[in-house]
Image (cartoon, rainbow, N blue to C red; front, side):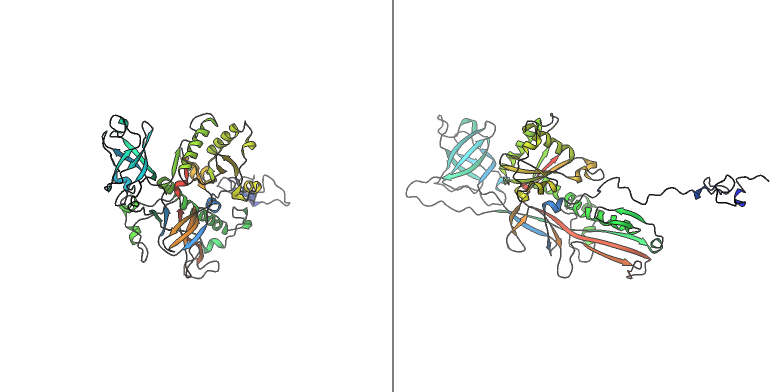
Length: 491
């Protein structure tokens, strides 16, 4: 009978030759379909179509990691040295009393401007300033100053008419006393501002069952952590570890400290009851973006819709003016997304007559004055005013599966160096990087980066489950100190 697709495989050919009558074809899913003997050409190398997929490294560049033993880290930061009050209210013309709002006084029992002090009073609408003397003959009432201008209104001998019932700002510039009088009454006690943050516990794991470990499939890989060669099921473990490493940094950048009466805390008692001996009543931790929004500077729409380089310079000079009003830290690092980095390139090139290299003359003091070292880290430098800036792309803001998806944060300006703060636990002044991570650790347990294997597969014999589980854990928080010197760029 003639050969058909149904019985062709019953009569093999005498030689190893491909004929229309000697193979079984299973590709159609019916009958003796055996075309699968023609296996595809298999590439054993994994194609790295997304390049380096990790986004961590930001904190390693700008900060440090230090152990702690408590559920909370508390630090104190200096207040300003000079005495000033904003939003004060003048009386009517002829009235020498200036009222300081309670919000400006804060927790102080009374204002710190003492009798005999000389002050500058500024009316911001007319941009007019007047010097005055705080009456040294009377005690000042809480929240009030009795002061007389050195150059007043000729008609009244007191404050200019423009100051009547106006909102004014005040700062002290000295004092004046007549001969033979007593010293200035009282003293100004230094005040500090206290901040704190709490660590969070970050967990993940990789798991594979015992049966799958026996079905080995080799893949040649070169991963972001330097692993290369042939891997089988531990390929997934490697990616889980890389993802967990990224989470450690992302949690420190994105974290928010939950409000006591909002969000997750309003819906569940999880944070108050989870775990043995748990005492936290709020969830979350304050990350970099949250800290800058609460205590730092936020610039929206850098360079705007202006032509490249033209709008950026005006914006940047306004940022410099704000830095002058804060700590005036000379060296700063810019971590930017692609669009904002190009705005900076255009701005610098425009000031250099179109030549970018002519404008990149920073001192590179942060990199031991070695330009090659800075460039190896991906930084390019420039100088504006009295400041040096080191600019680099921040991959996290460009990555399409993380912040690149949102595109609302365009970059951050981070001061370089260290700050001096008072550590409440140590009871002394210490120097710390402006940005650093604190992790839980003691002689008993170091929780900076824990990893362990459980199960009954792959050499682990800890329980009866037919799996191998690789566990990851860390407990940490971020300290953003002197946040008034940080700038966040948003869209």
